[in-house]
Length: 142
Image 1 (cartoon, rainbow, N blue to C red):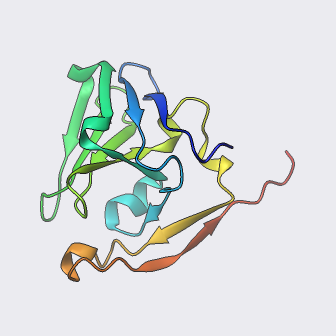
Image 2: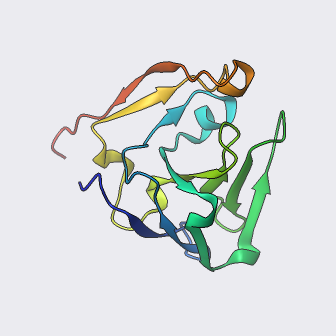
């Protein structure tokens, strides 16, 4: 897997929402989070600047979910329900992008993914981001 990819095309499961993304540091920003929403959705996210995402199709199919402080804006396809990206609470000038939506990339391509302590958000701790652990994937050869 090329960790240095600069850009990619992406889509939700049903293909209604399609986008192009320019990543801030390739796939090197890959992470999971322990906040209540991320724990449930289980996605690996990578970073892109706000201007780095261009919606190519299905802008009208994008729904937005906000909770708690209402700072983060989580975007998903209103038809298939797949989370595509979110405006980050810890850095509102960036999006977190679901790697599973990126063409040719699978969450299972990552051997290790850092897990950040989003349950105790950096915005609530003077900007200090804490690691919660590492998620590992080991293929069994299926």
